[in-house]
Length: 184
Image: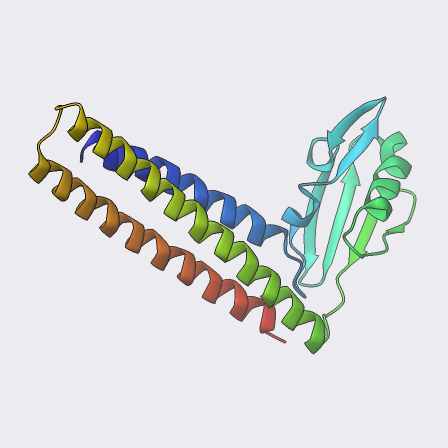
């Protein structure tokens, strides 16, 4: 591999990682601890991720249980979950917080699939931007006399193959997530 394809691969890997992170935050009918990743709790004046303040368990497919290590943070965690855009009402028993995940309606599942499609398109745009960046880098090297015109053609062909491969990965991830969302 050349420096141009290496650069493109690194950027495309980041795009795939970002897509996976976005997909993990989409709430399906199943309890997924990753939906709490973006929620910050005001803990002694410091915005802190829930996962640093509590253990998150999945005792059953449609329930998350949050057990704070510091019991005084229970109310702050509950408030942060209520204030988030999660759309779930937590129940607090004084020791733990339970988050029931109701099964989404057909209409809501279709909206979630549209959201998945939007994230996948953003992923493909990021992959294409990585291709463009690598191609520009190779063209500059050819213009500066660092590589030949034939080398440039080979590089562009390799970069395009990478782009096609990563676009297929995005499609596969989208297909899997859409199937998970539409599952009843």
